[in-house]
Image 1 (cartoon, rainbow, N blue to C red):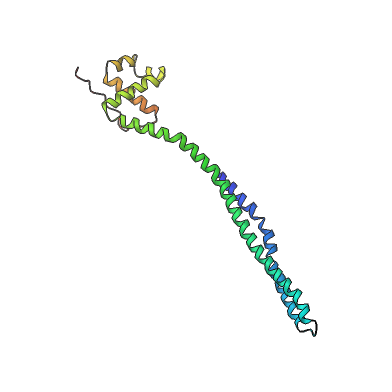
Image 2 (tube, rainbow, N blue to C red):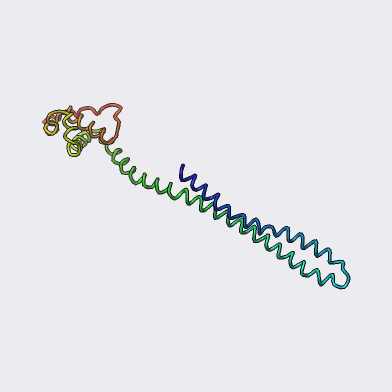
Length: 185
């Protein structure tokens, strides 16, 4: 929101330069006055036509000034819009890009972990990940020897380790992972 306000401020401050274009657009007034003067001297005997020419030229100059003022005003407005938009959008876009760079790998890891929690082999992989990445205090909450429980394929230890790994990834389990049934060896 802050960058949007700053961009709007840049737009308004740049638009102040349009005042000079409005001054050039005053050529309409000059054109009108010179037209009136040309018509006034038109009826003068002997010199009317010769005296009218400079007023007509000044009238054309006023039209050119008006035209230039309109184009300058349009250019300043476009510049203000571009500068305001860039000022607002560039930092916002960079922030979103930085967020996406950090967030997308997490989304992929969490999606894979969620998919792993649906299978017995996946639960075993999650348990192994918890054993290799969790700290001693976290592992100690599961039991006195979680590594031995995992090696002996204790279904309760594997389920607890998998749940720990899912919690560490920020994945909330609506139903806790079910213990892996012991394999008949």
